[in-house]
Length: 300
Image (tube, rainbow, N blue to C red):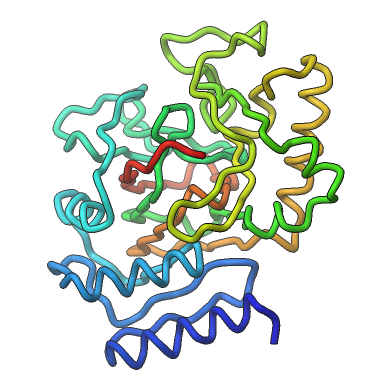
């Protein structure tokens, strides 16, 4: 039994023993687990939150099926794991929404978008990394799910870092990169920003290329959005080549697990040690999700 399998097995046994109605089943992929026996709309006891947090840290992604959550309940759930971000960068009408709720949707009404990201594919990225204090957790709730498309894929950046060639590890040790805020995960330029011509001057936070997870102590690669960014101190051409090498390695199939959404899914993931992306959705199929991100620590 390898270390990952052993960790998953111990986690599941411990959860069942300590809370009989609560089980954690690993996906069998590179990361992720499905949690059953928890109603997330209820007020969660401190012991249960601690156990869920333990499972989240062990598996990086937790999936809760068949949930029914109001926006207020989703925000309350996020608060059990930290301080939610208020939505600061937005290109759709937020009238009537709680400050912490971000809408991810392709639905249009009278020519207006009801949410972000539309129907196209979302490239690999890390949530909120363009800020000095990126997201630790993301909680994404599926209210309206199309019959096909829009799957979310995740890549394990612990494993990606640990399997890098030693020469590459030496090249990136101590390096920092710009997490560009000018572009969305859909590859479009954000409202109020311009396309970045000089990558060395790109707007956004600067973070270490390799970060140490404050809760697990493990090291992981940490990059913002695929195809964007700049590693400081390198010629732009060299930075581009190194970033391409890292992204190609990070997204190898052996590090990736894909979640196929069902209505009522609540998926919670740890942005400090993974990246995620999304497949496209037919423009005629309706997709509506609610998202809250929990503020993390400054990466080191």
